[in-house]
Image (tube, rainbow, N blue to C red):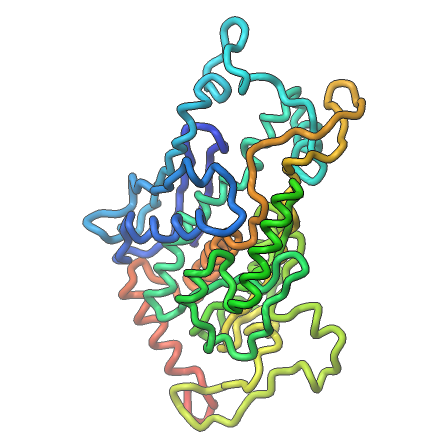
Length: 396
């Protein structure tokens, strides 16, 4: 079973990742993982932290001579800013009065962050105990794990992409056929948008938002091509692939909405306008094609052979240069909320985090379906299955 866990705080020594369930024989390198970590650090509207960190995952187990061993993969990502937080984030108890201003207790809580519920849940007197782990810095660890999951999907012909479809009230032109998207141009776009005109307006909105000391959210879309039909299951609520994808995307910091395909947009249409009509089989190698993908590539909790499409909306983040009124953790009296270095807009890098989470979910479901302790064994299982997928009088 593919599963992962992460550890680490935003200003601690670094992040730790353990990824299990990847079959033996998958080519993996730190350079490949570094490409995805670098993509996460890009994006118009990022804050000063990205000028400090140049993320690099160090593989410490589970890979030998450039290929996975089938054993747990362990990785670390160093926090270069740790040097400035030695006292504030010390593992050992502090002796005497703190010398660094970063060591001071934080009691000014922020609406929209984990500050208040986290402090109440764990009984903390210092909000830093919450915000360090609740920080989006943790998503660097997810991207490191997700890069290996993406590499696994690539090995079996699947391709995963992402782009921004809106920032604030600026919307990109709808894309009828995702295969026509210029993904190289998306990667070069500061806001990860396929619509160059909308991209300029998005950047202008981010500039205006920054000037106002505010933040802005957006909407991202993840597209996975060449997913085999039948990944996931209809038989149990916790095996449905669309539900698993939705949960994974909702777990990303500041995400407040998720849909498979257009989602809420199809709820206003009639059934005849929504269902993806199945076309007659004319190519034995490509059965069960559709002329639309309104349902985002899933039916009944399983992939249906069309591209898997998921969208998610990320709210404006709560840390703002111009702080909102709030209250003090100690007294309950009105104060201005705490400011911690942050971004203006997180939608572009959130796309890359979304890719990682979808890839991890798909990798888990894919391996549960096809199994195998090695890549070659999994490939045999997949090839055998694909020979049975088609009209029943032809494929048996």
